[in-house]
Image (cartoon, rainbow, N blue to C red; front, side, top):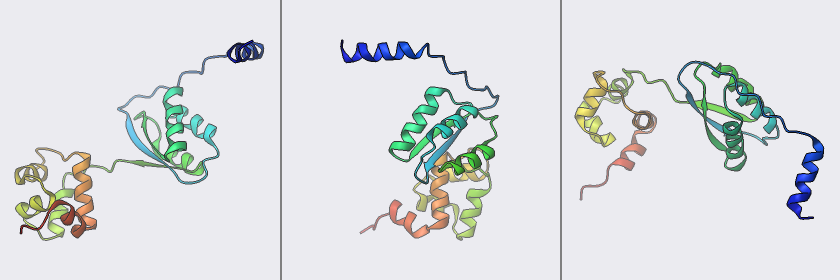
Length: 171
């Protein structure tokens, strides 16, 4: 008897395998969370159960658990109607930190620029973007994407580091 046949025979003796119940459904646009392993990660089944309760399919929750176990980070799309603060608290106890995208405040970019005493032209040059793009952000015609907001936040925290990464000596 081959190994595959022996395994099938053993599984058949255990009885039929039931399909997992579908995850609960929520309304609202999905929210992407970045999950980061913060400890030994010994309670993987509890994490899986909590992700299922937050609306993930078994396959999606399994993929998140596998990424967390392997590289320590995973992007997790959670239903918008789920209680995300409660999910974050529950996961924290299970050695998983849940992070979400910061809110996009329309006045944030202008406030950072003003805090550093820069003109729009100067700030655009330091960020490596077109001055019209910056004006559109500040006047609310467009919204910066998450990567651009991250750059602005990084500049606010460490202007010299961002300037060194974006600019180079002219001579």
